[in-house]
Length: 264
Image (tube, rainbow, N blue to C red):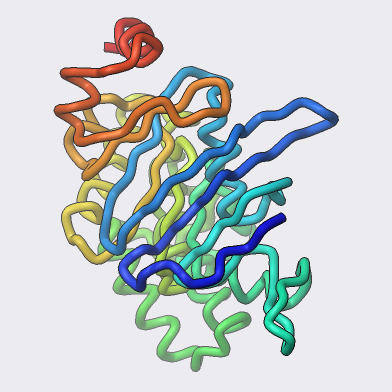
């Protein structure tokens, strides 16, 4: 594996270069390269099996990549630099520290069932970031209010709707003050009404301009509304990218046109 001689520019939050990933000899990602800039909202579209979720998980090292490099906010994911200047694989405490800077919202909410919504949000900043509890609780209240749950802070997950649970999950991720938010089809497990609730919160985040976001979704009109850039993937490769108008209204690639004809 060849490592770059210099770090990405400071305004590049994610730099993926020639990333490859395989499972049991089956290659899922093929030389995927992408830059994501600070404050940018990038939406990943494409047919099922395109590699979108795999790529997202690879950025967070939930799927360790086989080849290529991934930098997040100046840190080479999965590797640490030795005193000699060489890079060596790393999977311990250092990787956990790298992941703290990345918020990940999954399809399923993964809330702690024995904790209230408020406890779910403030617990990790206190345990991991060592924030004073009073400060973490106050920030958690502000975040839950931001996602429209000021009146549900004391509810446990089993007393919340799916849309409300997903909004708690978003607040929990934001509580860690990440430089990057990853969303893996966050509405796929929700009914239409709850989907609208979650998309409204994500639109609010996107419009704030202070959150760098990568979103895997099948919600095409949502992508048109919030994305600064749309990236289309198929068969583990990046097909094309551009503004929503360029990709959705004037796609260049035949595979993109075929995909859009099925979902629009």
